[in-house]
Length: 167
Image (cartoon, rainbow, N blue to C red):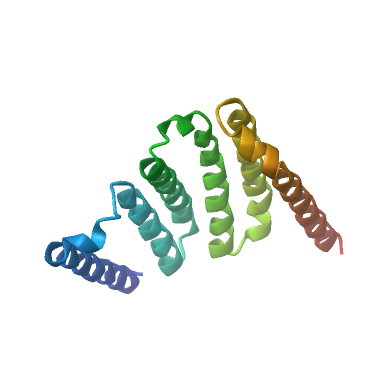
């Protein structure tokens, strides 16, 4: 475990050092970067550490931080700060994705699937519900069938998992 920790720390330090050096020497390269990339980067580091160390629990904060960074990057890019009125509803979905990743890393996918899919469904329903009230009307009216498809996929996955358990 200590060896993996040292390798991971060394790789991160080398990559960050190279990134910062490139930013100092060629600042125009990173003109598209903004502060949300810090959150995305921290989230990716948590996810990498979860994969390298086999500690699946780190995937949950990793997915939350990466997701929040993605939201803030979208808002920074579009200057659509009013979208926070409905986009916050994606956060439970990020937790659900983290739980799914935790289950994959810890090799107990069946145990975590129900909780993860429940959070993802709740997140999608809240996102569409609040989105229709606060600014997503045109998108929701066009893409509402995606929610139906997702619910169908969840139902199918649950049925297949139950069928395998009964055999």
